[in-house]
Length: 125
Image 1 (tube, helix red, strand yellow):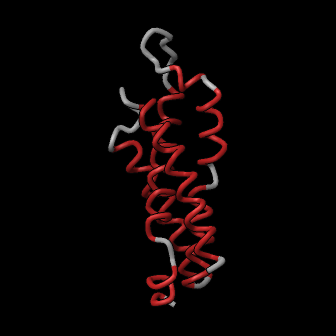
Image 2 (cartoon, helix red, strand yellow):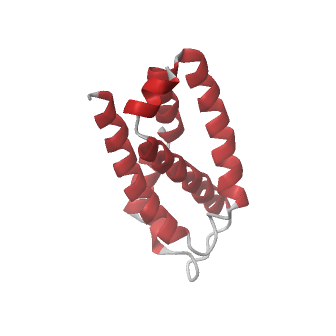
């Protein structure tokens, strides 16, 4: 099963979706802080931020389902729980909700589009 993932799976797609999930937790951390109109990037209250929130919400779940296709249900559930916890910890520890949150949201949105495409395309190969 692992050999099948290593041969036919999209490693880059999984990493890109994981990066976007980490940025999502940094984004949520930033939204919990009181707003500062002068210092906050416009992406926090913009349509792009809302689109990113909707697109990044199922990223960890999608990685778990994707890995379950190759590794089995047990390893998919285990990977999903581990990725969820790790993305929350890394999103806060790496301070992805800091000064460059606007850049991370734009890069995270691009990473989601590419990651979702690569993982879905590899399922149909």
